[in-house]
Image (cartoon, rainbow, N blue to C red):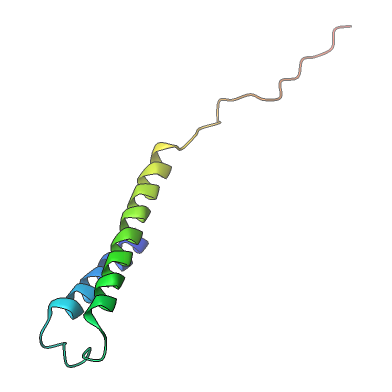
Length: 76
């Protein structure tokens, strides 16, 4: 949950730098394609994180009822 919030915040800040005219003066030395590339990378990381999180929730294995070592008493 924390990673998702951080990634969404990074995406929003990066999108604000790309599309905001008032922040253009702060980022006038940064090429817009660099910001767009960072946006794409952040989006890919977010999607990968979301897929892996859902995948790990789906694949949880419960070995609670598995009895691997069963010992029987020796007959006398």
